[in-house]
Image (cartoon, rainbow, N blue to C red; front, side, top):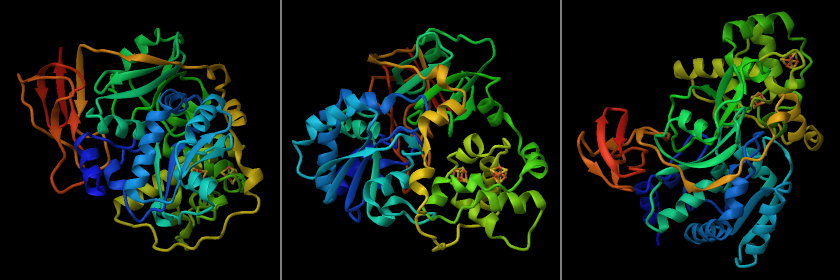
Length: 441
Ligand code: SF4
Ligand code: SF4
């Protein structure tokens, strides 16, 4: 198979980065890469998906990774797994002997080990330039479920379901294989229901996830649904408004610089300095635009506001507001930003996951969420046409059509970054809008 053939296969089968922003995987494959990394860091507290998936489907995932490495003609493949995922590491070690170019890269139990920039440095010692992607240093990173989806596509099965961990204040934490378009309420019911009187719903991990509602549906990027008490400080942080965050920064930022000292991107030499930003933003200083423009190099990992700042301030949220404002006004990140080199202090400034989990008040929820064997079912699915970065897919079915499970229901937008969408179950199309296709059993 050529690189163009595999790219078409991935686009036609609807494969996007399973988690994160949902970048179409076909567009990530590039022969300029000399290294391929499997990302099984899963560094957000409470997430339980990738380690289970890689342990259960070790052969399927690693053989597919090897297959991709041959098409891309990369020299080295790193399987990045945290050393603490002992059973997954054992399964990987047992399988690795079958391949000539693959190595295990044992990752430390720190946050954010799964950030592609951090992972690339840990595996290869190469520093991705600020504002760049790993390909800039010859690296392609794919996550575990994405490679599993490539395995399925090679066997004629498109993306129709997503593994989702449902945990926190639910009776039976579990990792479900859910059809795209199923409501989060249905997932929570399958996890035994809510066990707190005042729930908040975090979609994704506690650090980078966002608050959502139970009426939302599973998409190709839904990794987890965390049910947490609204009173938890991390939930309150996510509810906070920018204007209040700024007033609090004006009143309480003591310029201790802890936010900068522990910033993972700053430690790799990127020109992001949350402490300098907090100083100019909270004092209204505008004679030097650098700290504002450098907000574009923040990864929004959240360490500064959920861990580092002893005053409980919100550098991440304020940086995000600044970054969004600049983008809306057409400001682009500076080209070739000055890098300061990897900090000598980095090894002892990485944040242990255990301490982070404890600081966030999440220890009571650090529980297993076993993977269910069988896909779960729903009577009605509302399937968004935009589940990925790029142009939405284009519906090719109409109200009243009968569809089969796995049938193509939306094609990639023409001449744009886009992927196809397929029916997760057999049923009747009961509605088609510009954004959603509804299928009812
Ligand atoms: S850690 Fe908090 S108080 Fe210290 S400089 Fe950063 S924002 Fe200000
Ligand atoms: S969110 Fe804070 S700690 Fe994370 S990259 Fe941005 S400034 Fe650094």
